[in-house]
Amino acid sequence: MNDWSNEAIEKIFILVGRLGFPLTVAAWLMVFGFCIGMALVITKRLPRTVVISSLIVGGLSLAAHLFDYFGTLRITPDLAVEGNPIWRIVVERLGLPVARWYGLTGKIMLAVLSFEFFAYYLSGRARLLPSTARDFTDFWKKYGENAGPGTRIANFFAFLFALIGPFCFYIALLNALSNSELYIRIPAMPIMLAAYIIILASIYLVGNYLSWRQNNRKNT
Image 1 (tube, rainbow, N blue to C red):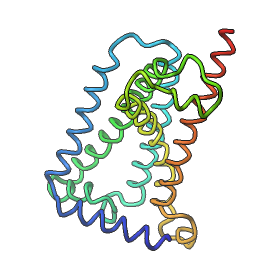
Image 2 (cartoon, one colour):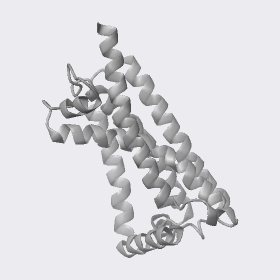
Image 3 (cartoon, one colour):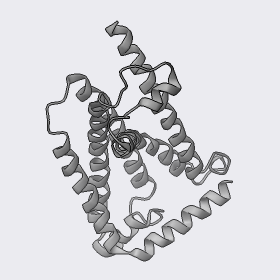
Image 4 (cartoon, rainbow, N blue to C red):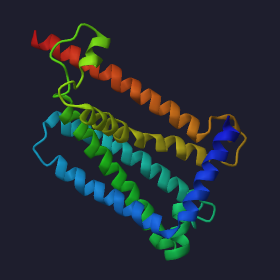
């Protein structure tokens, strides 16, 4: 399974490499644009609890991204053996200092997006919760029934994106173990990423339901 996963990653990296420098510019600008766009979306005054929770998520994401970033530079300061083709393209076209700046600013912006998306998820969740539900199944049948499927999908995506950042800790671990026998034994990145997303989806389903039940008990 690990061999198949690593081959899939290699094919993706080859495709990205073929797209070349325009993709690297577009990727950075897209992340920057999303940061500005999401800031405009959540400009209204957020409850203190939402801000605190979102700061925690954003801080955890920032720690994971920076851990991965500086771990990569420790292993390959000149990025000569960096696997990410986007970084290699920037090095080749613009030089190492710009590539480091590109990577660092990208990581920071992704952490900012984690904060913004989690704030969006929390602030929009209240209007998706049903007023009554018999059980877990009935809760999810009624969840966001008056908001439309687009709003439900956006809320779920915001939750997933906000919490995907900590997965960089595992990527950094893989990079640190790349020259050891343990690297072959532990699950490859795509396998663990799929498992991590499944865990996040389960947390979304169960967490929203439990939060709704707790709020209902307080109000009764």
